[in-house]
Image (cartoon, rainbow, N blue to C red):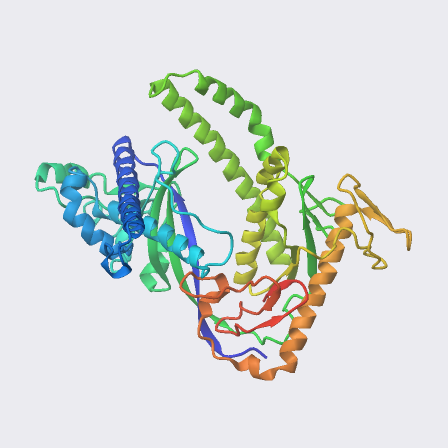
Length: 508
């Protein structure tokens, strides 16, 4: 039986490719430059304060008599910016105030992460002091936040002289409002709506009906193209599944990700793999290395700040953008097929960062196959479909274990691509053997999790305080996947209690 009907909240980013006019592109570049300027201004202010306090401590000044510490809260930084913007940036009326606010918000987030990492409150890899953004190397980006006027982001009846665009291929751009010149305001009004290559009607309908709320709109220049990333918070009613019941689709699959093949499944899937269960690696970056090297050679011979250099930089960015987009489309095809056809998906927890640091060519191959992106897509897609994702611990010897008898080999060099068991005589592909073991281990971890919940009935009826943990909403403090634990966090309004486990992680 299914539980009571509840409401769950999902936070997703909807990306719309933009096709701005030359005037709009110039305005966007000025916005991104203003955000970068405000980011560097905030970092410089905090850094000067820290240096001054350090000098005063060395001079023997007591702690109460030191210069007051500089707060990096965005609101306080905004007040200080308003007091000094005429001297720091006399050109500030030419851009929207949201651009400066975006830069100070990003600087505050970086400083907060640095502070929490230094004090030990932030888990994971240590975070250093934020860096200043360079004009040539940083990604042009600016964010706009407007919660109170949701439908104003899209075309309404008052646009285009009372006519609504039939396709909804436009999104609003916030314009500066501090210019008193009416002629300038009239010319800028023509830049308020940016054309999108994809229709925004579907998202606009959800916003109009109240099933979705826009949290933030980020416009960035990625891969030689402008794009708008709309952070949307969905409210969808759903039925809470019973935490001790098996998944609706009990069929499971194990995934062994690699470089020779994009992934190897524990069994062949028609239309997705070959007869051995291998998903071919598209090697998108490898196919474009020749063209990229040619552009880089021509770029190295160009004069700095020349028009030819700007054209070649744009061409190189478009090449990298095509590589990224092609890779993402292939990964979306694979992850959609796996999330739709299987109720339990088991994947290995790989240390991709550690593997990439060993050798240069290995790191480039890992970046080309993008194993972390495959896992990220599987995580949120499986969560949306209400099925189960099991993450097997990286210490589990999936490649060295015989899938037929369970015997574990002491050593198995990476160059050996065929697993041969000396105990039972089984011989099969190394990756296929690992995928079968990952599936078996995933089912074992899932069974242990359900058994522990069945033995503790009190944990089944815990009130759902944070339904956002289904997709690790940033407003919560806990996520659904914890290393070395079994976490049931995908049930809308469900249990967040984690039980210890020998190895593996499960997100139901």
